[in-house]
Image 1 (cartoon, one colour):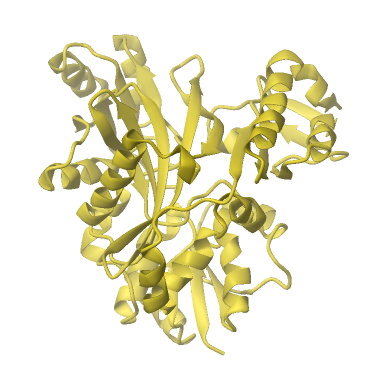
Image 2 (cartoon, rainbow, N blue to C red; image 1 turned 90 degrees about the horizontal axis):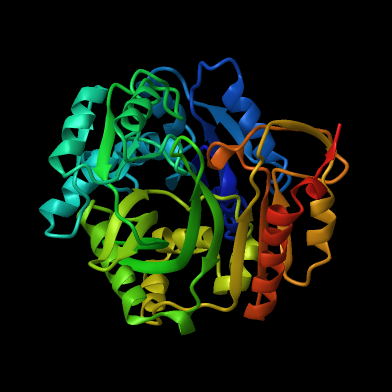
Amino acid sequence: MDKVVIVECISTSMNYVHDLRERGLEPVILETYNDDGGKEEARRQENYVHMEKPLPRRIQALPNYEDTLKLVRSENPILVLPGAEMSVELATNLAHDLGLKSNNPENLPQMTRKSEMHEACKRAGLRYIRGQMVANAEEAIAFWESIGRRDVVIKPTHSAGAVGVHICNTESQIRNGVENIVGQLDMFGAVNDKALIQERINGTEFIVNTISCKGQNYVSAVYKYKKRAIPGGAMLYDINENIMDSEVTPEIQGIMDYAQKVVSAIGIEYGPVHGEYMLDDEGPVLMEVNCRICGGDMSMKFLDVQFGHHETDRSLEAYLDEDKFTERMKTGYKTAGKGYFKLLRVLESIDIVDAPICRIAEKMPSFISYVGIEPNKKLHMTKTVDLYTNGGKFAFASHDAQQAKHDCMEIDRIEREEYDSMWTLA
């Protein structure tokens, strides 16, 4: 049986396991090397609870890249795919060095570093966001002053999920933002030697996910999402909703077209790209891309109801059946239903023994799933400061768009108006 190695198979990429087995292929999980006292392993185990059983065979990357390459070569895989942001570089290098279909490792800086992504857009003649890499608050303040003291965004250059993102419009906020990033560990365990400061673009935020095959790009999913700011300038995800094909306006078509050009500009030949974009009066502009499957713990059912397919399946098709994928591209962007993704916010850290909000959601016609929260389970809920400290994710999807919207908005209303009823405290 041919094997496919998935480097860090977590979150939505766990859907690869089912899709590979459906194709008669063996998924093998390569776990990256981490010397973090077991934190990453604990996170993996939380994900594996939701993975299709039996669990795939797991192999461990070694501290030395050449030893890891030798280990993976011994598996004789037909593909090596990234399953998380932390594994994009390793998976790309392994696939390339094994002579498998892959993206060019020379493009990894613009595939993984926010500053380089925008430089790639600039070189391609696409709209980009002005910014600068800074090593200290003084450099950040100088940039802020050079653009007329407009609102700015300060973020790590390598991250995902809005982790470490600060919106600033005062000198003290800028200092705080830089100090919270430079010299601190990023979400992958590396020390940030610099931060990226950019002018803030105000508009509506969209996700455009694409899948590429031989440099041809296919739009697989479009979402509109909203975030909310908390004291200190950090941004939190709130609600995502997919854009149905009947809702594609000229402006949204413009985002889709622009996104495909961005994917080409950063040099993608194969596989999925999760892109985040802003639409304002000047049109679309890139915020960042993540060159792997979109995260968010999205189940196959949740995606299938919305789009009639799920992206891990389409991604494998791009690698394994190029003719079928190319033919599918001719149909353009198609949807099957409406989907919403709601993330709960925890106002202060608490210990709970139950989550009645789960039972309320389960009774709703469009309910699909919840992740990160369960009824009748003791949990410590950390105060929400970023995507990864949410109080649970709720997925709703239906062929009846109004039903999906009604159910999601009711959970949103309960969170805003009846917050204390969501939890039973220990």
